[in-house]
Image (cartoon, rainbow, N blue to C red; front, side, top):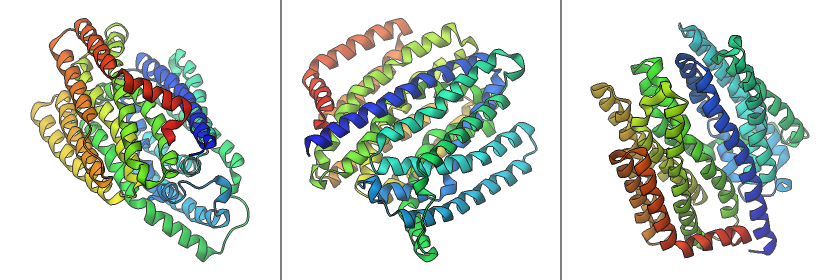
Length: 473
């Protein structure tokens, strides 16, 4: 790879990490300010809205995922704009139909808060559908500087709107939903102007545009289902609690997920950079790149799990009404870490190798298992912790089975680093279960230092390669 491309990788990484640090900062504010000011029931409804908003991508039927797969490795100026514009017209009709469907569903709800929530989700279908179209196109063509602005702009505006929570009349989930929608639609207006070439201008024939639309649907449908089922592996517990428990139980479970998910930002940032860089490499280099990515994740794992200790401190002193989540917060952190590995490592290489079908099979199988286990254990025990441990078991098996499969496909060998990962997760769970928080923190620091010293050459090598851009080779 040329020095120019190496430098480009570093520059893209810096921009994406910079934007993700903004997202992380705003995520901290939201994760702490919102539950601190809202009642438990209002926080529960707000979390229901956020949760279902994550899944509005189902209305795209995989079109945007298809763009991501088909044009990964292209440059922006090389895109077939005429065909894309006509295909995007069909796409706009598709998500408009999805919006209408959610509005009808909202009207059928007898519970007024859920009517409001699903009406707002319907409005998200349009705005998130277009933002996803532009965002995934930018990722595919490696325009990550532009993408970095995209992911942080509305987050900043929404965070500023949280100052409204100082007023009693605005201290409810309705206000938050309205501000969330306003921030997204302002971003949409800006994006449509900035990247108008994707939607406005000369168009190809209707038949040619429809073939492009159908081609993207075909390429992305399996990836969409795989991604959604993968998300549901981690989200199934929330649905079970929502319909089998109280709104207060849902709020507690969602709070634990929200706190633990803050550490996921660093992984999602790196995964955005990895895919376009990977698509520009010879396939023969994938095995080496897979090893480098796993090495990076081992370093990140320790930082992610370390976030547990300040989270417990915050709950003990600030969020006292959510103290019961501490009993399952440690395994929840491990679940989020495993989700990070699935996102950064496994899913990235499934997509790069065009193994959407095996990825779909793995995620659907895990989804079935986690639904059966979680439902059975929760209904029999009534304990939120039972859902977390059922999810942990399922995700653990899925993540490392997928890693083994990918290594076989690329002709690689099983790495000792995998055993270090598993060992670190086991140590974390044991010490946080057996010892008090202060003692487990001390043990965790000592263990982390021991691993850092033992793996110092690998850590230094990774940091140096990331700095110079050789990581992209």
